[in-house]
Image (cartoon, rainbow, N blue to C red; front, top):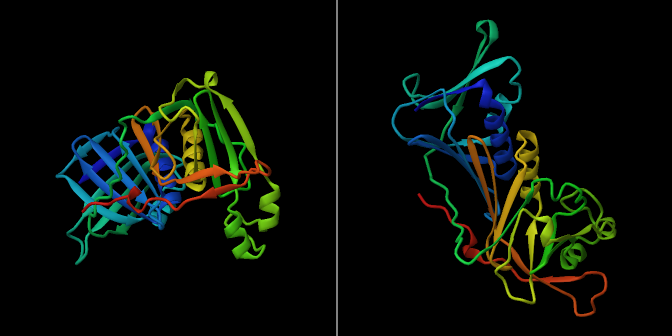
Length: 295
């Protein structure tokens, strides 16, 4: 494997790897055909992200796959100022263990090399069934004003999408008022309720295939926020959201010139409390088969 990426597309590639590093601590890299595929699975195996990149100055060598730690990759691509080309190649003759080399070639002949230890090439993959799915296409900054929540409740109807922050009361009680994943005390999280309602006419595409009475689902916001940050950094303006129902996988997808990004997440089925006050939600556990990896 030996690929070179010119400066024109280096930012998009680097930002994609940064985004993947926010999903999982390990990256699965597959080079084959005319594309480089990089994938990540979170520790809970509830979120899978895949990036397909196809803009190379050169692409040589046999098909190759490996795993690498995300943090060293993100670190070596942190400073791209004056870098004119990135070369990634396999170095398997310099010692007992092969390394994947990230070589950054800059102006005035400055070359930086980062040798990363690699693992066996386990191929990660998650499937989303498009058949019969609802699909919305909207601007990628849809959720930029959502703050102070780890999860979101989506209430979807034939003519409206309503999104609101979700704080599991059972989790908050178990924490005894302690700080959650967002770093805020549980009682403060409960006080920070964000809700937005968007009419179907505001979407570029709004194809709803669910029941007439609507459906509800709860999903983790952390990985979605990472995807939105990536879309903003590379100016990918549109985001597609596809789903069937709560407790079934949810897919987000974005495109920008030479790369495609897909995020598949498990969801929980949500239902509003019978009282209708406070926006309480009861949630069922996500299906264990929502994610899979193949070797």
